[in-house]
Image (cartoon, rainbow, N blue to C red):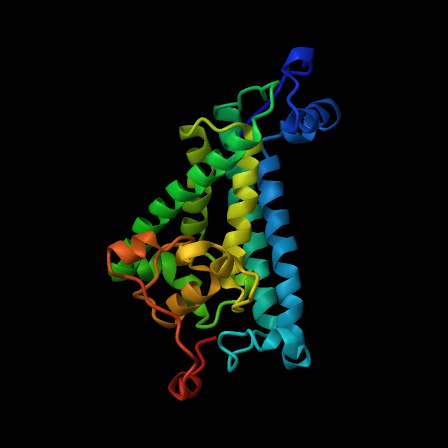
Length: 282
């Protein structure tokens, strides 16, 4: 996404109180990595793995960890090692076969600009990241709604993500190539449209990956964003879990305002006997 020349000069007067020393360290000691067009991909995929692993362990332990299992939304549906491996393998395959070549070709056609010398302020990182998340939330809400309302788009593009009625952490990237590339395109374009600093774009990417994983963990934990964010503005796992049970509801990936405005919101409900008796769609 960004690049930098080898001769980076750091004017003494440009140093900020908080983020500038950190940014200087990156430019002086990790310039090759940070300026690589593959760094955003490495950052995003490693975040996906690190955020998903703890919840995968919880799923495998199941009822042996009652302090956590009691927060499981669909207790009658437990992901297996085979299911987790299949979703992770699909994510690896999609990235290696499609995303990596796409980044390589795009970097040849349009080389990334140099990394800036100055760091953003903390306020710029916060507002920029929030702006990226809100724009993406709007884009994906529209895309998601259209793909659920059009049976052909749903079948050929989005249906794969609904292989599982009860989502789990690895399933956040259980996607078709078209959906993954669409999400990746927005993830790269939105920070550019909002004139974000690379550090802001990276922060927004990590936050969005965390929020996406949390959407799919299948646990309504007391410290999750859906409980911490006031006024129920963030849907989180309860809202997205309900989407996998009732696919014509809760289309927004992160926030709840679009679903409320357009009447597509559905509240999470306790697991019923009917759901438990339903044929397993894993």
